[in-house]
Image (cartoon, rainbow, N blue to C red):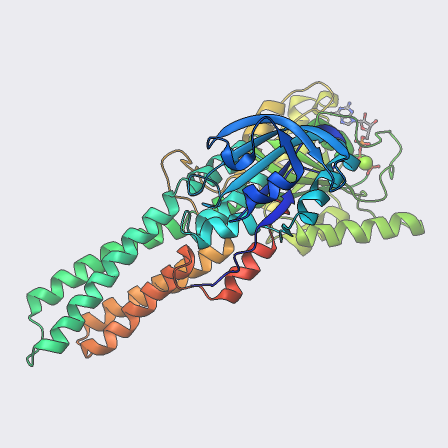
Length: 463
Ligand SMILES: Nc1nc2c(ncn2[C@@H]2O[C@H](COP(=O)(O)OP(=O)(O)OP(=O)(O)O)[C@@H](O)[C@H]2O)c(=O)[nH]1
Ligand SMILES: [Mg+2]
């Protein structure tokens, strides 16, 4: 377990922009005495009742009034960090906020490192490592589903699930070690069978959690979606439709978009990083050429490509080349401008595309709105690889957690195989202890200082 200094720390916990209110937080043994050096209220901070608010002034060492504030006093351990904590609500101007903050530092507080408050909550045992990581996930959540997953982690759902499997595996290991210690004969088969059964349950619990990662990641990090296709097919019109704004220029001149246009959208609750690109065609125009190269580059990186086609034009070499290059990618073909074609023509076009690409296109008109609902349904299907019950399911969104679970899963698998194949049981305990150690990395019990420092270094200041 990491040893940490007992400095009293302070930080501006709100964004430093001109706003109504800013909050400066002080945490540690000297929080109240530091506050008393700079706060002038009816009573001294140290004499205030815990979890109460007082009105007063922040003053400099020369007793110059810097701001009028509200101060909240909270006795540890019933605080975020479990330490004595003071929060000063001052006016939200950048200058005044910085000035109040500097007074706390002059009075003896140390400037907090990023994430240091949460790190203390962890080191003081209020939350475990995965809960601490979820605090950052909650702050950076871009969709309601991401928020829901993060808060469930903060409330300890993932920790509880992991701890439960970990304890069960540790118990099996302890039972085997006890046997090795006190018995000379082999373990009875019935006992081994019982242990195998327990481990198989653990194996499937870990797998169940592990398998939520792909969908979980979508909620946490979002999905990269690229709109591609030949010029003038309606790519920029689609971008604007999905963003609900006139973000990109739309004209009937082929080659309108030349650079990548990128923006964020919330499509059916999924956070999407959406890009529109230059239409793909063989061209001599230097600028357009560069744009097309960029389109190809973006296609490499995309998680999903929306490939636009105009119902009135034939499937040509440019389309074929694109699909040759990116056939392995997740691509939805959109057959656009169906308001300009007969039903017959739409059917015909769809059939050609299906034959050429092996993908059934969605026929739409971005102008009349025909087929748009179906397009959104398709998008939802493609953006979410599996339906997640974020209310009731333990979901993994963090790659560190996923890697840990994968290794632990492998250890458990190996231990089961070992027991089934009559491997000496002391070797089996090595696998079991490996699994226990790994799972402890997730909750932080077995995590090294280095790992812990690296995790908190990614936090924002003041949290
Ligand atoms: N009739 C009709 N016109 C459409 C439809 N969708 C787009 N258009 C028109 O098609 C033209 C091209 O649309 P854009 O969205 O600029 O097409 P693009 O694929 O971005 O074109 P480039 O940037 O040049 O590659 C514009 O005049 C649009 O108004 C549609 O569904 N029906
Ligand atoms: Mg365009």
